[in-house]
Length: 250
Image (cartoon, rainbow, N blue to C red):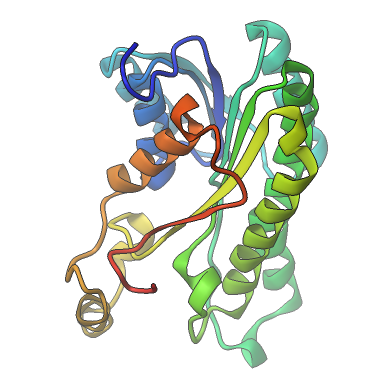
């Protein structure tokens, strides 16, 4: 058996149409997992991810739903489980960032950020753990952020939502470890994605200076961490926060 073999496993990745989510879908599929690729609105981008999954020798499907709609999340999880006979890995990756100093954060922006980043992760893990408990095997992985650990001026709502995922991972690890379910979080640093392409040059240079490895990360490097946490080899790792940040926060 090859290292980190995920053959026979069924996975769902929210926000899988681009960036870290896309790289995660491809990486899981390359190790043998069947991957359900969630998207909210951009079906074309999700189909591009599916094409990359198949090019990597894997298989999967796309499924459109809003992670902020708990009923839609539950229905999607139940449908996947019934059709594929199991659900072994979920990656709560979908997220948004509406930046601004706290005094400028509007209630609707705060609500939207918490609904997608936190409530969506809660709904996904709740629905998936019901299935995983019966299987007595499961992997729940939350995509948090270095900002959730160290804070960042101008990102109060985003930092709050991502920091909450760390507490959630540790709590669920304690609640469901006895049922064979591990729950972990990953905190990426600044990664080359659509979200970081618009960073002003001065801010980008400041980030590079503050990062010991002196570069932005790659989505594939975050995806590799997901594969590890999803694997049998990580069976004794739970409640852990895995930093993929180039040393920006240690």
